[in-house]
Length: 164
Image 1 (cartoon, rainbow, N blue to C red):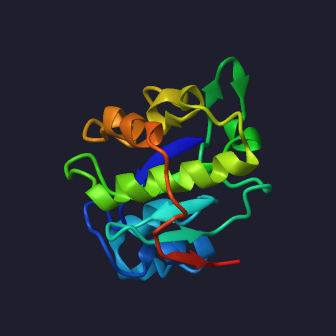
Image 2 (image 1 turned 60 degrees about the vertical axis):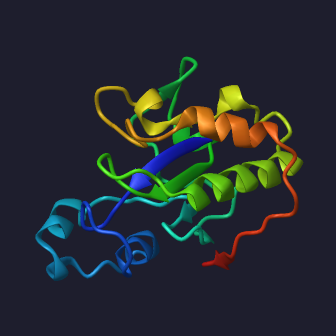
């Protein structure tokens, strides 16, 4: 599992732009930054917004385009064998408590289908593409996520939107 951070445009939260990017309908003229990413093919399995809403864009059994040029444990093309989860955030703003709670709940839910998804298999984009990617960044609290994963999680309390 690869944890990412995304904000569109950079540093802005909320709005329709992440949905539009992952659904392939981003309105390029709306913001100058969108021209820079117009040619990218990008998607994630899930996005967790600042309010904790979990949206699924790609079925877990299918390939999403979140990792780019990447290597993990000697294997490249990490998109081929990973689940990508984007957290709405950036490198200057702490993630919200509900994002951590719902990320842990999502991981616990995914573990029912993929029991080998242990903590050592949850990495950041920065770990699989060092020097190329920074996310989820210096403000992501890995120890908090580990702590939440160590607790028994009830059925997911988070709202879920399905985009398939």
